[in-house]
View: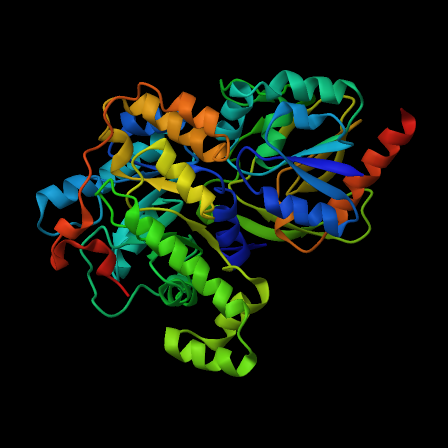
Length: 293
Length: 193
C-alpha cells in the first residue's frame, strides 16, 4: 500500500475533470457551492478581487476558515499557499486539506524558488501562462495545472491567451524532430524528458483547468471549448448578485459547454456579474500573472 | 460491444481509453437519448454529489433505471459506485438505487490517505492495480450481491447480476482486466436477450 504516489495525486485531479472549483470564504458559501454542484471548493480569507482592492501582503488563510469549510462539505477542500512558502503548505497538509494551490494570487514568499512539491503526500495545483511554466511546475511536483489568467478582474482575456498559448506550444512540440526538441527544452527552460513526453503524448501529463477571470457561464463554456479540463471560478460567484443561481449556471454551462441553447437558458436573469477590470488599466505591480515564473 | 461512459463530470476519457484497449467501442454519453443502442454503461469516478445533481437535472435517473431493467449492464467506479447504491451511509439521499448495497463515502479519509495497492479480484486472473482516491467502501451487501474483492476485510468490488461496482479507479492504470470483465458481461447480456 502506497500513499502520495504520482498516480494517486494526479488521479485526484482527473476526478475533477469537467467540473467547477469555486472560491469560498466561509462555511455558508461552501455549502452553497456544494449544493450547486461544485466538484471542490477553495477555502480563502478573501477572493482575488478583494485582495486586489485591499492591497498589502496576501497570505495563507486563517486555519479556522479552512477548518470550518472542511467540516461542512463532503467534496474536496483546497487552500492556497504563497509561492515558495514551504511552511504554509506544510501547515495546510497537516490540517488534512485535499489539494494545495501554490498561488500567484497571494503575495509570493520567494521570488526565485517554488515549493518542492514532490515531498508532499497531498497534491498541488499551480498556475501557468505558457508551456515552459507548465512543465517547470510539473517538474517541481505539481499534479494539476491551471491557467494563471488575471485573477480578480472578471476579464477572461488573459486566461484565453494562456490556454491558447499552451495548446499552441504543445502542437508545435508534437511536430519537432529530436534535435529540435533538445533546443526547445533549452529555450523553454525545461527538462528534455518532460518535453519528450509532451511530444509523444500530444498533451500535458496532468490535468489543466482554466482560471483567472471567469465571470459568466459563457466564459466557463468558452474555456472548455478551448480545451480546458475544467474551470476555477474565484471572485465570479460570490461577487455576483445571486451566487446560488450563478454557481448552478456555471456548473451546467461547464458540463454542457457545446449546448448553446442550454447555456442561453441558464444565463437568463442571473443579475449583474462582477464588475470587470480592463487589463491594460493594471500597472505592472498589479499583474498577478507575472509572479512565479 | 458499444459501451457508453456517462460524461457529465469526472474521468470520462480514461474509461473510454480503457474500454477501447479491452476491445470495445466507447461513446461519451451526455444526453439520455444516447442510451439507446448501447450494450452497457459505465458511471465514472468524479464527484458523486456533482454527478448525482446533473443526473437528476437531465433526467438520467429514470433513463438509466430503465436501461438497467432491460438487462443492460452497468459498471460504477468510485463515485459511480456511490451513484449505483441503494443506500448511502449518513442521511444523504441515494441516486440510482439499483444495487442492493450500502456505501460509505470518503471511507478511508481525506486525500492524504488516498493510496494504491494490488488486489485479488474473484473472476480476474492477475492481481489488479487499484488506485483509491478519497474512496468509498461497501459497508453492507444484500443476499444477491457477490463480493469480488476485499481490502483489509472491507468490501471494495462487488457484482449483482448485471451491476458491477468498485471503490477504486481501474481506469487510471494500464490494467484493462476489469474493463474486459465488464465487456464480457455486456456480451453475455446481449446474447441472452
